[in-house]
Amino acid sequence: MSKTIKINGVDQPIDVDESMPLLWYLRDRLEFTGTKFGCGSGLCGACTVHVDGVATRSCILPVSSLVGKSVTTIEGLSKNGDHPLQKAWLDNNVPQCGYCQAGQIMNAASFLASNEKPTDAEINNAMQGNICRCGTYQRIKKAIKSVAY
Ligand code: FES
Image (cartoon, rainbow, N blue to C red; front, top):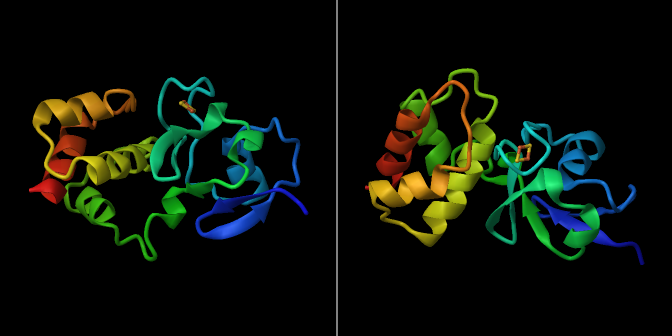
């Protein structure tokens, strides 16, 4: 029986080199291109997805480590882009260039699932590892707070 990873609710066969980082499996094999490559070293957060509900950097995670696990990408976060955070991102005009925003939203979604009423300091702490070169941090925080309060 072939090894599989559940991606956005569908079992997908691991038919690539098992050392391939999840990011490239998602983008190149499955064409879930919402997840972005930033640094490739686990440092910027652009590639953040959920693994069993926890925000995880997909660029440094070999697919071999994900057998039997459940991965959610930005494409699977909601059915029609209507997750409360996605709506808040639009309402608050968060993105500038937009490149890092899928990773930002995925990290925020995982964070809010574990802390529904975070303080400013908790938001800052949770989001500090997701880099935005456009400097949209204040709008990101505003959008997160609009969902929480
Ligand atoms: Fe994965 Fe930067 S691309 S953390």
